[in-house]
Image 1 (cartoon, rainbow, N blue to C red):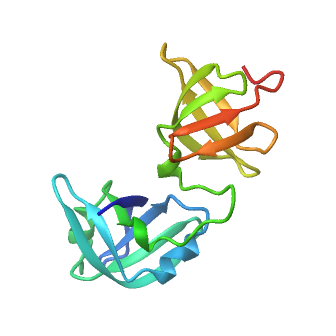
Image 2: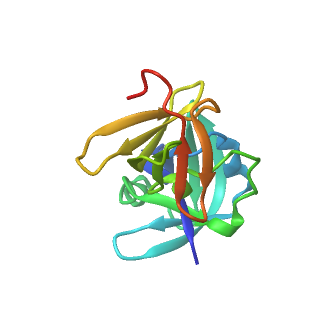
Length: 167
């Protein structure tokens, strides 16, 4: 089974075992539809039922079954949470999960190899792809239609238009 990371436990909230999550999604309300999550412990993936979901600013507060004290919640700090990939909803056209973009080979329209996507971060108006070449140099690629011309997940390849000033 395949899993995708949807957040990281960064802190506790209160005394009754609630954990604070930094979500890895644009739409934090997706947590409302989850019955359970998987916590990536050191060597295992632990399935945990969600008892309650609340929101505070840009973070998600989860009350998890079996985690009933601040001490138990504290043990989960810095662990990542995942869900089954199949449980994710279908995305619209030209919309991708970050996990699917990481590792894509990036080429110019002239078939010049530029590197691999190493990270994706939001800027407010659009995402930015961090591409690292074979020498370790980073290129920041804005995820806009003028630049990203083709994303081929099956062949793990992205074609971009090198607009002036991009490199």
